Length: 137
Image (cartoon, rainbow, N blue to C red):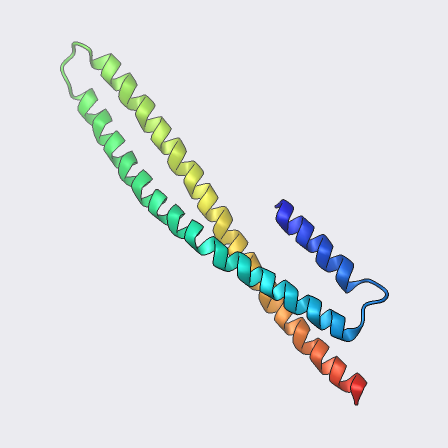
């Protein structure tokens, strides 16, 4: 979030500076697109790691649920302790899975935002090239 705020401030300052020329604007847009592409590229391994974590946490949750079922069906002596232990493990696993899902969703949302911004900057760059061509003609 801080990275995006700093980036937004940087691009705003560059685009709306009074002394910025058309070629400088083109350079700023190109640099901004490059930064967005870099962020997307750098986030791919993190997204893949989160995918693997989601899979392992889902398996762990299923195992914790099976352990709880086994504890509930066990002999009466010590059953409550086994159920409590299994419930603790189940809730911890569910919380970890939830946190991982939220992190995964946040990263996917960021990547979608970066892709949309990159597409928007591409359109702006095309318009700027057209404007530059008309001004020079």
